[in-house]
Amino acid sequence: MSKSSPAATTVGELLLSRLADLGVRHVFGLPGDYTMEFLDQIEAYDGIDWVGSCNEVNAAYTADGYARLAGIAAMVTTFGPGELSVVNGLAGAMAESVPIVSIVGGPTTEIMARRAAMHHSLGDGDFDRWVRVAREVTVAQATLTANNAAAEIDRVLGECWTQRRPVYLRLPGDVAHQPVAMPAGRFARPASTGTPDQLDAFENAAQRLLAGAVCPALLVGNLPLRYGLGAEIASFLTERHWPAATQSLGRGLLDETSPNYVGIYNGGDSPEPIRQVIEGADVLVCVGTKFFDWDGLFTADLDPAKIITIGRHSCSVGGQLFEPVAPDAALARLHTIAPTRSVDWPTVTDPARGPDARLDPASNRPITQARLWPALATILREGDIVLPETGTPTFGIASIRLPRNAVCVQAPLWGAIGYATPAAFGAAMAAPDRRVVLVTGDGSLQLTVQEISRMMALGQCPVIFVINNAGYTVERSVDGPHQPYNDIDNWRYAELPAMFHREVAIDSHLVSTEGELAGVLDRLRGTPERPTVVEVLVDRQDLPVGMPKWGMETSAVDYQTTLHGTPKLSWQGLPG
Image 1 (tube, one colour):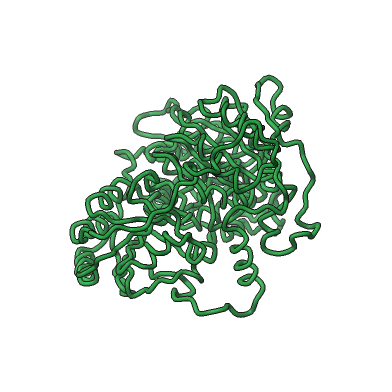
Image 2 (image 1 turned 120 degrees about the horizontal axis):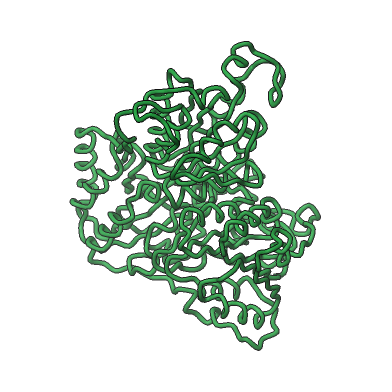
Protein backbone atom coordinates (compact mmCIF):
# COMPACT_ATOMS: atom_id res chain seq x y z
CA MET A 1 0.00 0.00 0.00
CA SER A 2 1.14 3.56 -0.53
CA LYS A 3 2.59 5.36 2.44
CA SER A 4 -0.21 6.37 4.81
CA SER A 5 -0.73 6.32 8.53
CA PRO A 6 -1.95 2.95 9.79
CA ALA A 7 -4.91 4.68 11.43
CA ALA A 8 -5.97 6.65 8.34
CA THR A 9 -6.11 6.26 4.62
CA THR A 10 -7.83 7.91 1.68
CA VAL A 11 -11.12 7.08 0.00
CA GLY A 12 -9.32 5.73 -3.09
CA GLU A 13 -6.93 3.59 -1.05
CA LEU A 14 -9.80 2.28 1.06
CA LEU A 15 -11.62 1.20 -2.07
CA LEU A 16 -8.51 -0.50 -3.40
CA SER A 17 -7.89 -2.31 -0.13
CA ARG A 18 -11.43 -3.67 -0.11
CA LEU A 19 -11.11 -4.81 -3.72
CA ALA A 20 -7.85 -6.55 -2.84
CA ASP A 21 -9.59 -8.31 0.07
CA LEU A 22 -12.07 -9.72 -2.44
CA GLY A 23 -9.30 -11.04 -4.67
CA VAL A 24 -8.99 -8.29 -7.30
CA ARG A 25 -5.41 -8.16 -8.61
CA HIS A 26 -5.95 -6.14 -11.80
CA VAL A 27 -8.14 -3.18 -12.68
CA PHE A 28 -9.14 -2.69 -16.32
CA GLY A 29 -10.27 0.40 -18.17
CA LEU A 30 -9.21 3.62 -19.84
CA PRO A 31 -7.95 6.91 -18.43
CA GLY A 32 -10.07 10.03 -18.54
CA ASP A 33 -9.72 13.49 -17.12
CA TYR A 34 -12.10 12.69 -14.25
CA THR A 35 -10.23 9.47 -13.30
CA MET A 36 -6.53 10.27 -13.20
CA GLU A 37 -6.24 11.04 -9.49
CA PHE A 38 -7.61 7.57 -8.75
CA LEU A 39 -5.47 5.96 -11.45
CA ASP A 40 -2.40 7.44 -9.76
CA GLN A 41 -3.49 5.69 -6.58
CA ILE A 42 -3.86 2.40 -8.43
CA GLU A 43 -0.35 2.78 -9.85
CA ALA A 44 1.00 3.35 -6.32
CA TYR A 45 -0.96 0.54 -4.70
CA ASP A 46 0.95 -2.65 -3.92
CA GLY A 47 -0.97 -5.74 -5.03
CA ILE A 48 -3.26 -4.33 -7.73
CA ASP A 49 -2.05 -3.53 -11.25
CA TRP A 50 -3.64 -1.21 -13.78
CA VAL A 51 -4.30 -2.84 -17.17
CA GLY A 52 -5.35 -0.48 -19.93
CA SER A 53 -7.86 -1.52 -22.58
CA CYS A 54 -8.30 -0.35 -26.17
CA ASN A 55 -11.83 0.91 -25.59
CA GLU A 56 -14.43 0.85 -22.85
CA VAL A 57 -16.68 -1.91 -24.14
CA ASN A 58 -13.57 -4.09 -24.50
CA ALA A 59 -12.70 -3.24 -20.89
CA ALA A 60 -16.12 -4.45 -19.76
CA TYR A 61 -15.81 -7.73 -21.66
CA THR A 62 -12.25 -8.13 -20.36
CA ALA A 63 -13.47 -7.64 -16.80
CA ASP A 64 -16.21 -10.19 -17.43
CA GLY A 65 -13.72 -12.82 -18.61
CA TYR A 66 -11.44 -12.02 -15.68
CA ALA A 67 -14.25 -12.32 -13.12
CA ARG A 68 -15.29 -15.74 -14.40
CA LEU A 69 -11.83 -17.06 -13.53
CA ALA A 70 -10.87 -14.87 -10.57
CA GLY A 71 -14.28 -14.60 -8.91
CA ILE A 72 -14.69 -10.82 -9.22
CA ALA A 73 -13.33 -7.97 -11.36
CA ALA A 74 -13.06 -4.18 -11.33
CA MET A 75 -12.82 -1.54 -14.04
CA VAL A 76 -12.47 2.23 -14.20
CA THR A 77 -13.98 4.56 -16.78
CA THR A 78 -14.72 8.25 -16.92
CA PHE A 79 -18.01 10.10 -16.50
CA GLY A 80 -20.31 10.19 -19.52
CA PRO A 81 -18.87 8.64 -22.69
CA GLY A 82 -16.68 6.18 -20.81
CA GLU A 83 -19.28 4.82 -18.43
CA LEU A 84 -21.98 4.71 -21.11
CA SER A 85 -19.71 2.63 -23.33
CA VAL A 86 -19.47 -0.11 -20.68
CA VAL A 87 -23.25 -0.40 -20.23
CA ASN A 88 -23.36 -3.15 -22.87
CA GLY A 89 -20.84 -5.23 -20.96
CA LEU A 90 -22.50 -4.55 -17.61
CA ALA A 91 -25.84 -5.65 -19.01
CA GLY A 92 -24.25 -8.92 -20.11
CA ALA A 93 -22.72 -9.39 -16.67
CA MET A 94 -26.11 -8.64 -15.09
CA ALA A 95 -27.81 -11.22 -17.30
CA GLU A 96 -25.22 -13.93 -16.70
CA SER A 97 -24.42 -13.22 -13.03
CA VAL A 98 -20.85 -11.97 -13.28
CA PRO A 99 -19.57 -9.78 -10.42
CA ILE A 100 -17.93 -6.62 -11.79
CA VAL A 101 -17.24 -3.42 -9.86
CA SER A 102 -17.66 -0.50 -12.26
CA ILE A 103 -15.85 2.55 -10.88
CA VAL A 104 -16.59 5.85 -12.59
CA GLY A 105 -14.49 8.96 -12.13
CA GLY A 106 -16.89 11.89 -11.94
CA PRO A 107 -16.85 15.68 -11.62
CA THR A 108 -16.05 17.20 -8.24
CA THR A 109 -18.71 17.48 -5.58
CA GLU A 110 -18.80 21.28 -5.94
CA ILE A 111 -19.24 21.12 -9.71
CA MET A 112 -22.14 18.70 -9.29
CA ALA A 113 -23.70 20.72 -6.46
CA ARG A 114 -23.60 23.89 -8.58
CA ARG A 115 -25.04 22.01 -11.59
CA ALA A 116 -22.37 23.49 -13.83
CA ALA A 117 -22.43 22.85 -17.57
CA MET A 118 -19.50 20.44 -18.02
CA HIS A 119 -17.99 18.38 -20.81
CA HIS A 120 -19.16 14.74 -21.07
CA SER A 121 -22.63 15.87 -19.93
CA LEU A 122 -25.67 17.16 -21.78
CA GLY A 123 -24.85 20.62 -20.44
CA ASP A 124 -27.98 20.74 -18.31
CA GLY A 125 -26.45 20.29 -14.86
CA ASP A 126 -28.04 16.85 -14.32
CA PHE A 127 -25.11 14.75 -13.13
CA ASP A 128 -27.24 11.83 -11.97
CA ARG A 129 -28.49 11.01 -15.45
CA TRP A 130 -25.87 8.29 -16.02
CA VAL A 131 -26.34 6.95 -12.48
CA ARG A 132 -29.94 6.31 -13.42
CA VAL A 133 -28.72 4.40 -16.48
CA ALA A 134 -26.42 2.33 -14.27
CA ARG A 135 -29.33 1.36 -12.02
CA GLU A 136 -30.75 -0.67 -14.89
CA VAL A 137 -27.67 -2.88 -15.26
CA THR A 138 -26.24 -3.09 -11.73
CA VAL A 139 -27.60 -4.33 -8.39
CA ALA A 140 -26.17 -1.56 -6.17
CA GLN A 141 -24.90 1.97 -6.72
CA ALA A 142 -23.29 4.75 -4.70
CA THR A 143 -21.63 8.13 -5.14
CA LEU A 144 -18.73 8.20 -2.70
CA THR A 145 -17.86 10.97 -0.28
CA ALA A 146 -15.42 11.09 2.60
CA ASN A 147 -18.36 10.80 4.99
CA ASN A 148 -20.07 7.79 3.42
CA ALA A 149 -17.14 5.92 1.85
CA ALA A 150 -16.54 3.39 4.65
CA ALA A 151 -20.17 2.30 4.78
CA GLU A 152 -21.05 2.59 1.08
CA ILE A 153 -17.99 0.79 -0.26
CA ASP A 154 -18.69 -2.20 1.98
CA ARG A 155 -22.42 -2.15 1.21
CA VAL A 156 -21.98 -2.05 -2.55
CA LEU A 157 -19.14 -4.58 -2.64
CA GLY A 158 -21.18 -6.83 -0.36
CA GLU A 159 -24.05 -6.81 -2.84
CA CYS A 160 -21.65 -7.52 -5.70
CA TRP A 161 -20.32 -10.57 -3.90
CA THR A 162 -23.54 -12.03 -2.51
CA GLN A 163 -25.55 -11.56 -5.71
CA ARG A 164 -22.60 -12.22 -8.09
CA ARG A 165 -23.70 -9.32 -10.26
CA PRO A 166 -22.23 -5.94 -11.27
CA VAL A 167 -22.29 -2.81 -9.12
CA TYR A 168 -21.55 0.88 -9.71
CA LEU A 169 -19.41 3.30 -7.69
CA ARG A 170 -19.00 6.95 -8.69
CA LEU A 171 -15.83 8.53 -7.36
CA PRO A 172 -15.88 12.34 -7.75
CA GLY A 173 -12.58 13.87 -8.78
CA ASP A 174 -12.00 15.59 -5.44
CA VAL A 175 -12.92 12.60 -3.26
CA ALA A 176 -10.27 9.99 -4.12
CA HIS A 177 -7.58 11.69 -1.98
CA GLN A 178 -9.80 12.79 0.89
CA PRO A 179 -8.82 11.23 4.24
CA VAL A 180 -10.94 8.53 5.85
CA ALA A 181 -10.47 6.24 8.82
CA MET A 182 -9.03 2.82 8.10
CA PRO A 183 -11.42 0.00 9.11
CA ALA A 184 -10.31 -2.25 11.94
CA GLY A 185 -10.27 -5.42 9.85
CA ARG A 186 -10.22 -6.82 6.34
CA PHE A 187 -13.35 -6.97 4.25
CA ALA A 188 -15.07 -10.27 4.96
CA ARG A 189 -16.77 -11.90 2.00
CA PRO A 190 -20.46 -12.08 2.91
CA ALA A 191 -21.90 -15.58 3.00
CA SER A 192 -25.21 -16.55 1.45
CA THR A 193 -27.93 -16.44 4.07
CA GLY A 194 -31.25 -18.14 4.64
CA THR A 195 -33.70 -18.93 7.41
CA PRO A 196 -33.68 -22.34 9.11
CA ASP A 197 -37.45 -22.79 8.88
CA GLN A 198 -37.47 -22.23 5.11
CA LEU A 199 -34.53 -24.60 4.67
CA ASP A 200 -36.33 -27.26 6.71
CA ALA A 201 -39.53 -26.74 4.73
CA PHE A 202 -37.61 -27.09 1.47
CA GLU A 203 -36.00 -30.32 2.67
CA ASN A 204 -39.34 -31.82 3.70
CA ALA A 205 -40.99 -30.95 0.38
CA ALA A 206 -38.00 -32.25 -1.61
CA GLN A 207 -37.98 -35.49 0.38
CA ARG A 208 -41.65 -36.09 -0.43
CA LEU A 209 -41.06 -35.51 -4.16
CA LEU A 210 -37.96 -37.71 -4.22
CA ALA A 211 -39.69 -40.59 -2.40
CA GLY A 212 -39.86 -43.47 -4.84
CA ALA A 213 -37.84 -41.70 -7.56
CA VAL A 214 -36.14 -44.25 -9.80
CA CYS A 215 -34.68 -42.10 -12.58
CA PRO A 216 -33.71 -38.76 -11.03
CA ALA A 217 -31.32 -36.45 -12.87
CA LEU A 218 -29.59 -33.13 -12.39
CA LEU A 219 -29.35 -30.09 -14.67
CA VAL A 220 -26.74 -27.40 -13.99
CA GLY A 221 -26.86 -23.73 -14.95
CA ASN A 222 -24.42 -20.89 -14.40
CA LEU A 223 -24.97 -20.01 -10.73
CA PRO A 224 -23.05 -23.02 -9.35
CA LEU A 225 -20.04 -21.72 -11.27
CA ARG A 226 -20.34 -18.31 -9.63
CA TYR A 227 -20.93 -19.68 -6.14
CA GLY A 228 -18.17 -22.30 -6.31
CA LEU A 229 -20.40 -25.35 -5.91
CA GLY A 230 -18.46 -27.59 -8.29
CA ALA A 231 -16.92 -29.90 -5.68
CA GLU A 232 -20.23 -30.36 -3.86
CA ILE A 233 -22.08 -31.21 -7.07
CA ALA A 234 -19.36 -33.62 -8.21
CA SER A 235 -19.55 -35.42 -4.86
CA PHE A 236 -23.35 -35.55 -5.05
CA LEU A 237 -23.32 -37.10 -8.53
CA THR A 238 -20.68 -39.69 -7.67
CA GLU A 239 -22.18 -40.79 -4.37
CA ARG A 240 -25.80 -40.83 -5.56
CA HIS A 241 -25.00 -42.18 -9.06
CA TRP A 242 -27.06 -39.56 -10.86
CA PRO A 243 -26.64 -38.42 -14.47
CA ALA A 244 -26.18 -34.71 -15.08
CA ALA A 245 -26.40 -32.35 -18.01
CA THR A 246 -25.44 -28.73 -18.23
CA GLN A 247 -27.01 -25.73 -19.87
CA SER A 248 -24.76 -23.74 -22.17
CA LEU A 249 -24.67 -21.05 -19.48
CA GLY A 250 -23.21 -23.45 -16.94
CA ARG A 251 -20.63 -25.24 -19.03
CA GLY A 252 -17.29 -25.70 -17.30
CA LEU A 253 -18.61 -26.77 -13.89
CA LEU A 254 -19.04 -30.50 -14.58
CA ASP A 255 -16.21 -32.83 -15.49
CA GLU A 256 -17.14 -33.74 -19.05
CA THR A 257 -14.97 -36.86 -18.91
CA SER A 258 -16.98 -38.21 -15.98
CA PRO A 259 -19.41 -41.10 -16.58
CA ASN A 260 -22.08 -39.02 -14.83
CA TYR A 261 -21.92 -36.30 -17.50
CA VAL A 262 -24.37 -36.74 -20.38
CA GLY A 263 -23.95 -33.47 -22.34
CA ILE A 264 -25.55 -30.09 -22.98
CA TYR A 265 -29.32 -29.83 -22.66
CA ASN A 266 -31.02 -27.31 -24.95
CA GLY A 267 -34.63 -28.45 -24.86
CA GLY A 268 -35.93 -29.85 -28.13
CA ASP A 269 -32.61 -29.12 -29.87
CA SER A 270 -30.75 -31.58 -27.63
CA PRO A 271 -29.45 -34.93 -28.90
CA GLU A 272 -31.97 -37.67 -28.19
CA PRO A 273 -29.94 -39.48 -25.47
CA ILE A 274 -29.63 -36.22 -23.51
CA ARG A 275 -33.34 -35.51 -23.89
CA GLN A 276 -34.13 -38.97 -22.60
CA VAL A 277 -32.07 -38.41 -19.46
CA ILE A 278 -33.41 -34.95 -18.61
CA GLU A 279 -36.97 -35.09 -19.91
CA GLY A 280 -37.37 -38.71 -18.82
CA ALA A 281 -36.35 -38.02 -15.22
CA ASP A 282 -39.08 -38.71 -12.66
CA VAL A 283 -37.48 -35.92 -10.59
CA LEU A 284 -35.24 -33.28 -12.12
CA VAL A 285 -33.05 -31.13 -9.86
CA CYS A 286 -32.16 -27.81 -11.53
CA VAL A 287 -29.23 -26.07 -9.83
CA GLY A 288 -28.84 -22.41 -10.78
CA THR A 289 -30.53 -22.84 -14.15
CA LYS A 290 -31.90 -20.11 -16.40
CA PHE A 291 -34.19 -21.09 -19.26
CA PHE A 292 -34.34 -18.68 -22.17
CA ASP A 293 -35.37 -19.01 -25.80
CA TRP A 294 -31.97 -20.20 -27.03
CA ASP A 295 -31.63 -23.02 -24.49
CA GLY A 296 -35.05 -24.62 -24.52
CA LEU A 297 -37.53 -22.21 -22.90
CA PHE A 298 -40.14 -22.94 -25.57
CA THR A 299 -39.13 -26.49 -26.51
CA ALA A 300 -38.21 -28.21 -23.23
CA ASP A 301 -40.60 -31.09 -22.52
CA LEU A 302 -40.38 -30.70 -18.74
CA ASP A 303 -43.11 -30.98 -16.13
CA PRO A 304 -42.65 -28.26 -13.47
CA ALA A 305 -44.42 -30.50 -10.95
CA LYS A 306 -41.43 -32.88 -11.09
CA ILE A 307 -38.73 -30.21 -10.73
CA ILE A 308 -36.70 -29.12 -7.73
CA THR A 309 -34.83 -25.85 -8.21
CA ILE A 310 -31.93 -24.37 -6.25
CA GLY A 311 -31.44 -20.68 -7.01
CA ARG A 312 -29.53 -17.64 -5.83
CA HIS A 313 -31.62 -16.93 -2.73
CA SER A 314 -34.57 -19.31 -3.06
CA CYS A 315 -35.55 -22.88 -3.90
CA SER A 316 -38.70 -24.49 -5.18
CA VAL A 317 -40.26 -27.93 -5.18
CA GLY A 318 -42.95 -28.61 -7.75
CA GLY A 319 -43.54 -24.88 -8.09
CA GLN A 320 -43.74 -24.15 -4.35
CA LEU A 321 -41.22 -21.42 -3.45
CA PHE A 322 -39.04 -21.34 -0.34
CA GLU A 323 -37.02 -18.22 0.48
CA PRO A 324 -34.58 -17.14 1.66
CA VAL A 325 -32.56 -20.33 1.29
CA ALA A 326 -28.81 -20.34 0.63
CA PRO A 327 -27.83 -22.49 -2.37
CA ASP A 328 -24.97 -24.30 -0.64
CA ALA A 329 -27.18 -25.20 2.32
CA ALA A 330 -29.97 -26.43 0.02
CA LEU A 331 -27.55 -28.58 -1.98
CA ALA A 332 -26.13 -30.09 1.22
CA ARG A 333 -29.62 -31.02 2.45
CA LEU A 334 -30.49 -32.49 -0.94
CA HIS A 335 -27.32 -34.59 -0.90
CA THR A 336 -28.40 -36.08 2.40
CA ILE A 337 -31.93 -37.06 1.36
CA ALA A 338 -31.41 -37.93 -2.32
CA PRO A 339 -31.85 -41.58 -3.30
CA THR A 340 -29.07 -43.52 -4.98
CA ARG A 341 -30.02 -44.22 -8.58
CA SER A 342 -29.82 -47.85 -9.67
CA VAL A 343 -30.94 -47.37 -13.28
CA ASP A 344 -28.31 -46.46 -15.87
CA TRP A 345 -28.85 -43.99 -18.69
CA PRO A 346 -28.07 -43.61 -22.40
CA THR A 347 -24.83 -41.91 -23.35
CA VAL A 348 -23.62 -39.72 -26.21
CA THR A 349 -20.47 -40.63 -28.14
CA ASP A 350 -17.60 -38.16 -27.77
CA PRO A 351 -17.02 -36.66 -31.26
CA ALA A 352 -13.28 -36.39 -30.53
CA ARG A 353 -13.19 -40.21 -30.57
CA GLY A 354 -15.26 -40.57 -33.74
CA PRO A 355 -14.20 -40.91 -37.38
CA ASP A 356 -14.63 -37.19 -38.12
CA ALA A 357 -11.83 -36.36 -35.67
CA ARG A 358 -9.19 -37.97 -37.86
CA LEU A 359 -8.07 -35.67 -40.65
CA ASP A 360 -5.96 -36.87 -43.56
CA PRO A 361 -2.78 -34.75 -43.76
CA ALA A 362 -2.70 -35.34 -47.52
CA SER A 363 -6.33 -34.40 -48.16
CA ASN A 364 -7.22 -31.45 -50.38
CA ARG A 365 -10.88 -31.56 -49.41
CA PRO A 366 -12.33 -28.22 -48.24
CA ILE A 367 -12.83 -27.88 -44.49
CA THR A 368 -16.42 -28.38 -43.41
CA GLN A 369 -18.11 -27.60 -40.11
CA ALA A 370 -18.82 -31.29 -39.59
CA ARG A 371 -15.12 -32.12 -39.77
CA LEU A 372 -13.71 -28.99 -38.13
CA TRP A 373 -15.07 -29.31 -34.62
CA PRO A 374 -14.22 -32.95 -33.83
CA ALA A 375 -10.73 -32.30 -35.15
CA LEU A 376 -10.35 -29.17 -33.02
CA ALA A 377 -11.46 -31.16 -29.97
CA THR A 378 -8.41 -33.40 -30.29
CA ILE A 379 -5.98 -30.59 -29.42
CA LEU A 380 -7.83 -29.41 -26.32
CA ARG A 381 -6.14 -30.51 -23.13
CA GLU A 382 -6.69 -30.59 -19.40
CA GLY A 383 -6.96 -27.15 -17.81
CA ASP A 384 -7.51 -25.18 -21.04
CA ILE A 385 -9.64 -22.03 -21.02
CA VAL A 386 -11.85 -22.29 -24.10
CA LEU A 387 -13.74 -19.22 -25.32
CA PRO A 388 -16.24 -19.78 -28.15
CA GLU A 389 -17.69 -16.59 -29.60
CA THR A 390 -21.44 -16.14 -29.98
CA GLY A 391 -22.55 -17.63 -33.29
CA THR A 392 -20.98 -20.46 -35.26
CA PRO A 393 -18.25 -21.18 -32.63
CA THR A 394 -20.86 -21.56 -29.88
CA PHE A 395 -22.61 -24.32 -31.83
CA GLY A 396 -19.33 -25.92 -32.81
CA ILE A 397 -17.94 -26.09 -29.28
CA ALA A 398 -21.31 -27.34 -28.00
CA SER A 399 -20.88 -30.45 -30.17
CA ILE A 400 -17.65 -31.56 -28.48
CA ARG A 401 -16.59 -32.52 -24.97
CA LEU A 402 -14.02 -30.62 -22.95
CA PRO A 403 -11.10 -32.25 -21.16
CA ARG A 404 -10.96 -32.53 -17.39
CA ASN A 405 -10.65 -29.16 -15.58
CA ALA A 406 -11.11 -27.23 -18.80
CA VAL A 407 -13.20 -24.05 -18.50
CA CYS A 408 -15.65 -22.78 -21.09
CA VAL A 409 -16.16 -18.99 -21.04
CA GLN A 410 -19.09 -17.85 -23.15
CA ALA A 411 -22.08 -15.51 -22.95
CA PRO A 412 -25.05 -17.23 -24.61
CA LEU A 413 -27.83 -15.37 -22.78
CA TRP A 414 -26.61 -11.86 -23.55
CA GLY A 415 -25.35 -13.07 -26.93
CA ALA A 416 -23.32 -9.97 -27.88
CA ILE A 417 -20.88 -10.72 -30.68
CA GLY A 418 -17.38 -9.44 -30.04
CA TYR A 419 -17.43 -10.60 -26.42
CA ALA A 420 -14.99 -13.50 -26.65
CA THR A 421 -11.78 -11.74 -27.75
CA PRO A 422 -11.51 -9.24 -24.85
CA ALA A 423 -12.92 -11.88 -22.48
CA ALA A 424 -10.02 -14.13 -23.52
CA PHE A 425 -7.61 -11.34 -22.63
CA GLY A 426 -9.24 -11.00 -19.20
CA ALA A 427 -9.31 -14.73 -18.56
CA ALA A 428 -5.59 -14.98 -19.36
CA MET A 429 -4.87 -12.13 -16.92
CA ALA A 430 -6.73 -14.03 -14.20
CA ALA A 431 -5.08 -17.39 -14.95
CA PRO A 432 -1.73 -16.72 -16.65
CA ASP A 433 -0.50 -20.31 -16.26
CA ARG A 434 -3.33 -21.81 -18.31
CA ARG A 435 -3.57 -22.07 -22.09
CA VAL A 436 -6.24 -19.90 -23.69
CA VAL A 437 -7.98 -21.19 -26.82
CA LEU A 438 -10.16 -18.51 -28.42
CA VAL A 439 -12.52 -19.57 -31.22
CA THR A 440 -14.13 -16.58 -32.88
CA GLY A 441 -15.87 -15.73 -36.11
CA ASP A 442 -14.79 -13.19 -38.70
CA GLY A 443 -17.82 -10.98 -38.07
CA SER A 444 -17.39 -10.99 -34.29
CA LEU A 445 -13.67 -10.36 -34.46
CA GLN A 446 -14.15 -7.17 -36.45
CA LEU A 447 -15.92 -5.62 -33.44
CA THR A 448 -13.20 -6.06 -30.81
CA VAL A 449 -10.05 -7.20 -32.60
CA GLN A 450 -7.99 -4.42 -30.98
CA GLU A 451 -7.64 -6.37 -27.74
CA ILE A 452 -5.28 -8.82 -29.42
CA SER A 453 -2.76 -5.98 -29.21
CA ARG A 454 -3.11 -5.96 -25.43
CA MET A 455 -2.57 -9.73 -25.31
CA MET A 456 0.65 -9.32 -27.25
CA ALA A 457 1.86 -6.32 -25.25
CA LEU A 458 1.47 -8.23 -21.98
CA GLY A 459 3.16 -11.39 -23.20
CA GLN A 460 0.14 -13.64 -23.54
CA CYS A 461 0.32 -16.55 -25.98
CA PRO A 462 -3.26 -17.48 -26.88
CA VAL A 463 -4.27 -19.86 -29.63
CA ILE A 464 -6.84 -17.99 -31.76
CA PHE A 465 -8.98 -19.74 -34.35
CA VAL A 466 -10.83 -17.38 -36.70
CA ILE A 467 -13.67 -19.09 -38.57
CA ASN A 468 -13.86 -17.10 -41.81
CA ASN A 469 -17.19 -17.71 -43.52
CA ALA A 470 -17.42 -14.26 -45.09
CA GLY A 471 -19.98 -12.74 -42.78
CA TYR A 472 -22.65 -13.30 -40.19
CA THR A 473 -23.51 -16.94 -40.83
CA VAL A 474 -25.40 -17.22 -37.56
CA GLU A 475 -27.75 -14.53 -38.91
CA ARG A 476 -27.88 -16.27 -42.28
CA SER A 477 -29.30 -19.30 -40.49
CA VAL A 478 -32.12 -17.16 -39.07
CA ASP A 479 -33.06 -15.09 -42.12
CA GLY A 480 -31.48 -13.69 -45.26
CA PRO A 481 -29.06 -16.50 -46.19
CA HIS A 482 -28.09 -14.64 -49.36
CA GLN A 483 -28.79 -11.07 -48.29
CA PRO A 484 -25.89 -8.61 -48.59
CA TYR A 485 -26.43 -7.22 -45.10
CA ASN A 486 -24.96 -10.46 -43.73
CA ASP A 487 -21.75 -10.04 -45.74
CA ILE A 488 -18.67 -8.27 -44.39
CA ASP A 489 -15.29 -7.10 -45.68
CA ASN A 490 -12.83 -9.95 -46.08
CA TRP A 491 -9.90 -9.03 -43.83
CA ARG A 492 -6.59 -10.90 -43.79
CA TYR A 493 -7.22 -12.20 -40.29
CA ALA A 494 -4.09 -14.33 -40.00
CA GLU A 495 -1.97 -11.26 -40.69
CA LEU A 496 -3.69 -8.90 -38.24
CA PRO A 497 -1.45 -9.53 -35.19
CA ALA A 498 1.60 -8.34 -37.16
CA MET A 499 -0.06 -4.93 -37.33
CA PHE A 500 -0.54 -4.70 -33.57
CA HIS A 501 3.05 -5.01 -32.37
CA ARG A 502 6.39 -4.35 -34.04
CA GLU A 503 8.58 -6.60 -31.87
CA VAL A 504 6.40 -9.57 -30.86
CA ALA A 505 6.78 -12.67 -33.05
CA ILE A 506 3.62 -14.53 -33.95
CA ASP A 507 2.63 -17.77 -35.66
CA SER A 508 0.03 -17.23 -38.36
CA HIS A 509 -1.70 -19.84 -40.50
CA LEU A 510 -4.29 -19.68 -43.26
CA VAL A 511 -5.96 -23.04 -43.91
CA SER A 512 -8.70 -24.08 -46.31
CA THR A 513 -8.19 -27.84 -46.70
CA GLU A 514 -8.31 -30.74 -44.29
CA GLY A 515 -4.65 -31.49 -44.94
CA GLU A 516 -3.59 -27.93 -44.08
CA LEU A 517 -5.69 -27.96 -40.91
CA ALA A 518 -4.28 -31.35 -39.88
CA GLY A 519 -0.73 -30.01 -40.17
CA VAL A 520 -1.48 -26.95 -38.06
CA LEU A 521 -3.34 -28.88 -35.37
CA ASP A 522 -0.39 -31.25 -34.97
CA ARG A 523 1.77 -28.24 -34.06
CA LEU A 524 -0.75 -26.93 -31.52
CA ARG A 525 -0.82 -29.83 -29.09
CA GLY A 526 1.76 -28.28 -26.78
CA THR A 527 2.15 -24.95 -25.03
CA PRO A 528 2.61 -22.15 -27.58
CA GLU A 529 5.71 -20.01 -27.25
CA ARG A 530 4.11 -17.08 -29.08
CA PRO A 531 0.62 -15.93 -30.04
CA THR A 532 -0.89 -18.16 -32.70
CA VAL A 533 -3.65 -17.25 -35.15
CA VAL A 534 -5.27 -19.85 -37.38
CA GLU A 535 -7.65 -18.49 -40.01
CA VAL A 536 -9.96 -21.29 -41.16
CA LEU A 537 -11.80 -20.77 -44.46
CA VAL A 538 -15.21 -22.44 -44.64
CA ASP A 539 -18.16 -22.07 -46.98
CA ARG A 540 -20.51 -19.24 -46.02
CA GLN A 541 -23.58 -21.51 -46.14
CA ASP A 542 -22.03 -24.40 -44.21
CA LEU A 543 -23.57 -24.67 -40.73
CA PRO A 544 -22.47 -26.65 -37.66
CA VAL A 545 -24.74 -29.30 -36.20
CA GLY A 546 -27.79 -27.84 -34.48
CA MET A 547 -27.70 -24.44 -36.14
CA PRO A 548 -30.15 -25.09 -39.00
CA LYS A 549 -32.94 -26.16 -36.63
CA TRP A 550 -32.07 -23.39 -34.19
CA GLY A 551 -32.22 -20.85 -37.00
CA MET A 552 -35.74 -21.89 -37.99
CA GLU A 553 -36.93 -21.81 -34.38
CA THR A 554 -35.34 -18.42 -33.76
CA SER A 555 -36.91 -17.02 -36.90
CA ALA A 556 -40.31 -18.22 -35.70
CA VAL A 557 -39.86 -16.67 -32.24
CA ASP A 558 -38.49 -13.40 -33.62
CA TYR A 559 -40.97 -12.78 -36.41
CA GLN A 560 -44.15 -14.82 -35.94
CA THR A 561 -46.99 -13.55 -33.78
CA THR A 562 -47.78 -16.92 -32.21
CA LEU A 563 -45.74 -19.99 -31.35
CA HIS A 564 -46.55 -23.43 -32.66
CA GLY A 565 -47.55 -25.54 -29.68
CA THR A 566 -47.79 -24.65 -25.99
CA PRO A 567 -44.57 -24.62 -23.95
CA LYS A 568 -44.71 -26.66 -20.76
CA LEU A 569 -42.52 -24.20 -18.91
CA SER A 570 -43.91 -20.78 -18.11
CA TRP A 571 -42.82 -17.88 -20.30
CA GLN A 572 -40.44 -16.83 -17.51
CA GLY A 573 -38.90 -20.27 -17.00
CA LEU A 574 -38.74 -21.91 -13.56
CA PRO A 575 -39.67 -20.32 -10.21
CA GLY A 576 -37.00 -18.31 -8.43
